[in-house]
Image: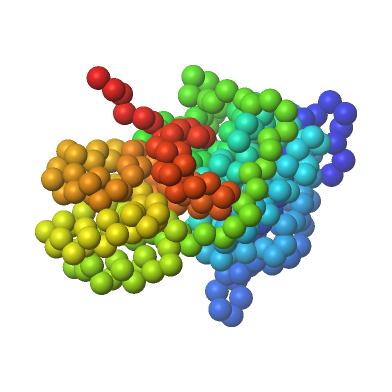
Amino acid sequence: MTAAPNRPRVCVLHVGGTIGMVRGDEGFGPKDGFLETYLASMKELERAELPAYTLTLLPPLLDSADMQPDDWVRIARAIVNAYDDFDGFVIVHGTDTLAYTASALSFLLPGLTKPVILTGAQISLAEVRSDGREHLITSIQLAGTSRIPEVCIYFGQRLLRGNRAQKVHNDHFAAFDSGNMPALATVGVGIDVRSELVRAPGSGVPKLVELPSRPLVVALRVFPGLQASMLETVLAGAHGLVLETYGAGNAPTRDTALLDVLSQATARGVVVVNASQCHGGRVRQGLYQTSSSLARAGVVSGHDMTPEAALTKLYCLLASGLSPADVRARMEEDLAGELTRPATH
Ligand code: ASP
C-alpha cells in the first residue's frame, strides 16, 4: 500500500501465528501469502483516518512454539533496519510465545522512540469468528498514532507492556494479562491511554543489542518431588537458570542436597534467578525460611518479573558477553520497565 503524504506510516511485520494460519491435514499451520491477500481485502485499512501500512513478511513464518532466540534478533534487526521509514511497528506473531518475544524485544531495543506492538489472534482470519481483524486494525492505529515508545502487546481490547504480560488463557479472547501492572491503554468505544504509566522515549534510532554468544539458559518450575539429581541434570552446562518458585519465591529446601546443587552452580558462575510461578505479586527472598536458603545459595531475586521477562533478560544479558557478576547485578535493575524495585525503608 502506498502512503498518502500526511498519514502516519506503520510497518507490519508478519512472523507467523494462528492469525495467518490455515487448517491442513495435521492442524493449523502458517501459509505464505494468506495474510497479504486478507489485508488487501480489508477496505477499512485504506481509510484516511487509519495510518497507511506496509506489510513485510519475515520468512520463515512460524508457529510461535518454534520461535528461538535467534528469531528475536531477526525481528529486532528488521525493526532497526526500517526504523527511520515508519512511525510505528506491528509484529504479527503467534500467541504461544508472544510474551517471550515481546520481552526479548524490549531488552534488545533499548531507548525506543516509537511504538512496537505485537499482536495475533486466538482464531485464524480464515475462520468467521476471528478476533484477528480488530487486533490488526487497532494495532495499526495505536502503532501509528499513540506515540507510546514501548514494546507492547495488543490483545483482547487492552494494550499491555510486553515484558509485563503473560499468556493466561488458550480459549478466551482475553488471552493475555499483566499481573503486576495495569494496561497502558484500554480500547472500547474510545481508546483510553494511561499516559502516566508510559515510559519516556529514548533518543534517535535504538541501538540493537548485539548477542555474540549463545548461552545455555534454562527454566525449571519447582514442583513437589523435585530432587537434587534432577536439578543437577538441568544445570549441566548451563550458564543461567530461571527457577520458577512457589508463592513469594519459595522452593523445597528440606532436602539440603538440592540447596547444595544450587550453591555449587552459583559458585561456578551460573546465574540463578528466582521468579514466582504466581501471575501476580513479587518474590521476597527472606520472608520465609524456604527462600532465605535460596538467597544464601546465591540465587538472585527476580522481584516482580514474569518468568518470561526473567528468561529473556537473562538470555540477552549473558549472550551480550557480560560477566556473571554484571549479569547478576543487572537482573535486579529495571532495564525496560519489566521490574519494580521494592521500596527501601
Ligand atoms: N500455536 C500458535 C502460535 O503460537 C497459537 C496462536 O498463535 O494463537 O503460533
